[in-house]
Amino acid sequence: MPTPSRKNDSQARACAHAVNEILWTTLAYGRPTDRALNAFLRANKQYGSRDRRLTSHMVFAVLRWWGWLARLAPRPFQDALKRVGANPDSYQQRPEPAPQGDSRAWSQILLGAHVLENSHRPDIARVWAGHIQRRSPKPFTEDDALPFRARELAKRLGVNLAGLREGQLVPKWAAAEIPHSLPKGETLSWLQRRPPVWLRAQTDAVPKLLVQLRKAELEPERHAQMARAIRIGHPRTNLRTLDSFRKGAFEVQDLASQFVAHVCAPRPGQRWWDACAGAGGKTLHLADLMQSKGTVLATDIRTRKLEDLRKRARRAGFSNIQCREWRGDAVSRKRATFDGILVDAPCTCSGTWRRNPDGRWTTSLRDVTEMAERQLGLLTSAATGLRSGGIIVYATCSMFAQENTGVVEAFLAKHAAFALDPFTDPLTGKNCDGTRLIAPWEGDCDTMFVARFRHSG
Image 1: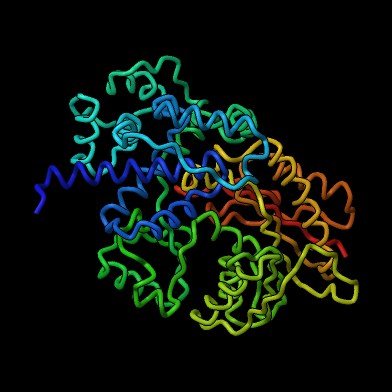
Image 2: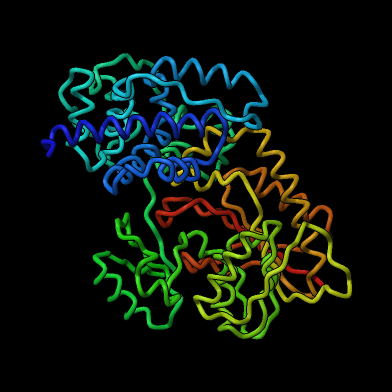
């Protein structure tokens, strides 16, 4: 049986190999990292549970700090990335294999990610440090400010990293797009913090659910304002194996995402339309708030997503959810019968860059502009399905003004029958003028924008 040190060395090399493959697929060809990671692990069954956890953690850690760590990547990887990046059509091409080399060439960048994230595997960090003939450096803590880490990182790694700045942790264009309502320094700092997992209780017996979660060795914390929102930190437990999940007692849903349905505030017996439902997290929340009375129509252009929603609705016992394909067309006047419509529009997802840091490096300013045009079109088409006096809620998980206030202003300028509808903030209990941009520090959550309109009738 291998000694523990040989095990650690083998695991460190396996992690480096996986990072090389997965980062290449993401950065060179724009494939979402979670899909690239899952595909790699399916193709490499030899990776055990510890290998999988380490690989997953380090892939996302490297991407979270890529703006600082990219120059430490192996030179063949950097050169190949520049070559592919010079071709604007590379994302549409069939991916070429990742550059190969000694897995130890990744040790420096992996050690850097460990130091910046303070991962819980110091034994593996010592292996990476040994590969570059250094002692394992002291990791930073979450309280260490970004300017301090920028100054100290080079010293702790023993490399030349002159000129590191906070703004490099996102592309230059993205830093310029962060709105004034989100202080740039605080926003960038929160983007570097690994987000917790939030659950939404889908049962009236919330205290009983909390007991069940504690028995599963989780540490649930109930939100002070949104009573069914439960924070569980960074669990190692597979939540889908829990009996309470299989019985539909909870859904995994970020706090900011839960905020949206509360702004919709649907009432039992009403008729609602979730126009861009996807897999239906917000659809389920609407149905739950309506106490399964009335109707929620869930539509999307991706029918496979709707099939996921059907399964989730059956598990939760909701019988008032209907699913249908929608391709963004206007609704005929005789079918404009909805009391409320939710347009949770496709977006750049920049508000989720804490949990999906790959989006920082695969999104462009052109994507933001194109998304804003698409969002305005979807909002305009969906609004044709609203009855006189009804409400429509527009939401994105983006922090960029083009996709948020820009779309709202453009919609209002063309539709005199609509006006912003003030609402009570579900997070704070304060009054809002009809729009709300949630910052990550307000709930240790994603960034989310919501606007609520009412048809004047």
